[in-house]
Length: 488
Image (tube, rainbow, N blue to C red; front, side):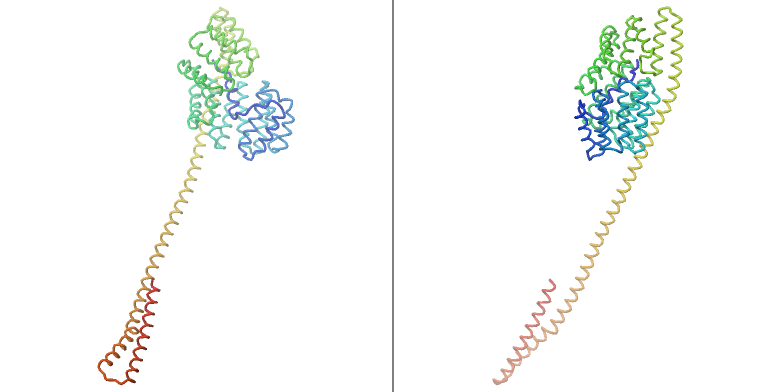
């Protein structure tokens, strides 16, 4: 029971949570404010979010497309061609004109590549993949997601990579590669675990996709867990009421309560919201069949095959034809049973061919991840090497400074020792030749005065000599004191 791209609608609003512009004045003003922001990354995100909510979520601004184009040409002329083409693609996709939307997105991608706008390439490739999923081309869709994943890697943005992983899981679920889908969902969920409060809507949409996978695998217990999470999501999921109804129907289907499930699915079918209608009709057809109402199931399947469905995926048409063949066989209508079996076989051959290409693309995506991881490790190594070189250089510089300081201190001590030794010699010389000389003179004169008998005139002469020697000794002591003061 495939999804038919049901979850692509849930993913559309992951990149922003601003209110929808309901008139051209408010929308134009919001666009102008977004374009005038100085932060380039935030500017681009806000512009894309506003354009999607103005032209994809509602048709109210379609007639004002020219005013939006004028605003883009005035405030962001280099990117205006790509963004104006993007607006036209959004309008066509909303109107279910998928081929026109695809061609316009390819033009937008060309313009963004020409202008070197990595973020816009990421957005456009995602939108192209959504459109290709709507057209039932899983191979082209996965290729576009691969390109989007490359752009997310170039932007080095974990959030963008998580969004692409979520989108890739949708493709794998459609082609019944459930194990692969869970691998990518777990990778996206790892980002949410790392940043639990960063984007609640992303975590909720991961829960939706996981619940879808568990329903397809008929894992009732796991489905119940994720249905409970969705019921507690606090309206953080786009189209939350339909989502809750759908999961209630899934739970009833796995419990084989087909009558109750039919009541819920019929309400979903009456709501013609895009991207969920085919999935609900398929579930209703299978429900009718299991509830022993083959005619009702047959009518729905014939409408799906008659071209009322926009989705041409061989994996889906194979299931339609296969169930029609079973209904015809039970009614003993062997002609139609054989006819539908041949149609189912033809679709199965296309599906098998697609699976080979999908397998190749899956390998290429993993190789891209390995290459991206290698490049990231290389860049990290280069950064670490630069930091290591800077650390070594800083350490060498510190060692040199310490060495110079030590050498300077050692030299200072050496010079101080030399100076001290020189002063010691000077003081010794002064003591022996200056101070002691005058002291010897005084002592000699004192001895003469003590032993001799001198008259008054001679005594005055000795006294004169003694005073002169004392004065000279005082001068010498002052010189010694000055030398000692200089040493301090």
